[in-house]
Image 1 (cartoon, rainbow, N blue to C red):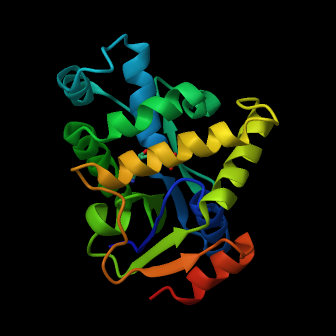
Image 2: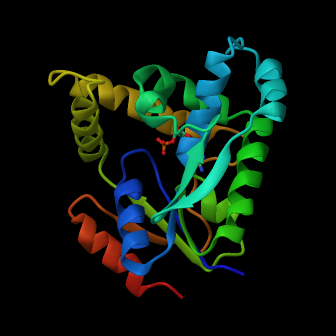
Length: 220
Ligand code: DC
């Protein structure tokens, strides 16, 4: 069985950057589970599904198809032969992804995909329920957190670079981020929570290197 390192935490806590760096440093595959929820949300939206109907979303989830392939140090996702790119990170998808990912059928679909990736090799998987629900048997569980203002600043900077936000909109970014945190941690199915026995790391005043190295030295 391959080794799985679980990195959970709220939006913009540093999970993606840190998980990518760990994968690169120790030769594991990086897995972005949030991107899978984003892809499903994007496919549902493109399909013209009624986003306020849990039944329609659940029905759609039965037929959603994404291909997975190891590419350099990550597991890449393709829909009809193409990687979805930054389409899945728009403010519109940001607003829709938390409610879609709260639908149990969507969670079952993505959880099955993630578990299947173990056959591809050793993994660093980032998300919200990785250590608690997806790989509860993993002994490598980490939970990253940071001050909400710092998280908003980090996400705003990324959004400006992608052309999704202007320089004056940090407040809006913070509002959207806190709203997602609230939905993610209060939903019934697999809420964002600190997995039992996880090592909690506050990244507010740490560099990416420091967080990655803290995790690497604690891998069992
Ligand atoms: O990490 P992210 O911001 O790209 O995640 C997008 C959304 O996906 C997040 O708001 C909640 C959901 N998500 C989840 O429910 N479970 C995961 N393991 C990862 C993400």
